Image 1 (cartoon, rainbow, N blue to C red):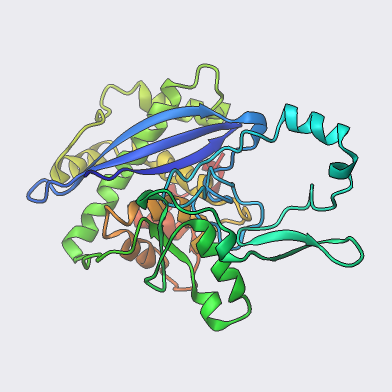
Image 2: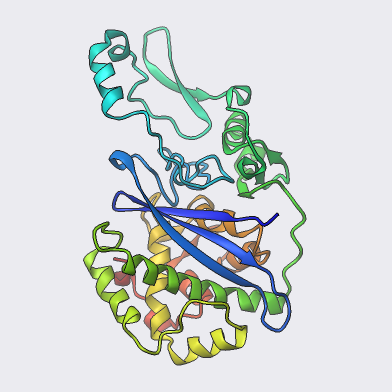
Length: 334
């Protein structure tokens, strides 16, 4: 059975979900990756995205994209709660009991739930893992850095919460989507191929967003101007299964087409907080779906952290993707 992994991002109220369908053709051509993009309008901006609550486990972010980002990890990092809008609001106004519930508007981060103390004051406490919904399939399972498979992201975050303040809890992170499995070591030759595929993928993602952005406002005006130049360039390498040699040659000849996509992806991930650095949690929406099918993912991002401070700065990120120092520009993250 083939596996598909989804990565999503909320752009201006619209959920953008990208399904990565890996086709492994090991050999001279290396592994290839195809990308399908489709959009799901989010209700009332409730859907969360990339480094947020559910879009891929956010371990320390508070209101992480519930469902969109870290939906039940392993599934589509994006989920939209559909029953909390107009009708629910009407009911709240009519039901005094609901209005008096202090937990109604009190948000807790993943792994915690709201309870009230003796003074009827809302407080966040660790959720009992046994209260998490039962998983309905393998796609909901997640693998953590302790090499243990959890039934769902809910089970993982609830367990992590109980370890808060401990050394074990500090080191425990959600590693990737799906049950834990053997990840083969990444050799140097394979590591060199990884950024070739990623750069091409990011460029194609942006072009696809641009082509579908008539009404959805997936890109802001400044981004559209930059992507338009890429889209209209006759020399642009069209999406497809390409050899590593062709991807390397295209990067050399059409280098300028890849500079903005690399900056754009950094900006999409740098959200909690927006500080010019990517933490493990902020990287999760991108790396967690990739690890099961791109075994060099972990080594690649580890080596991007040149100064080994557990954060990836923009200059480190850009250099990892082959962007020249003189072309690294904070102002390009628009």
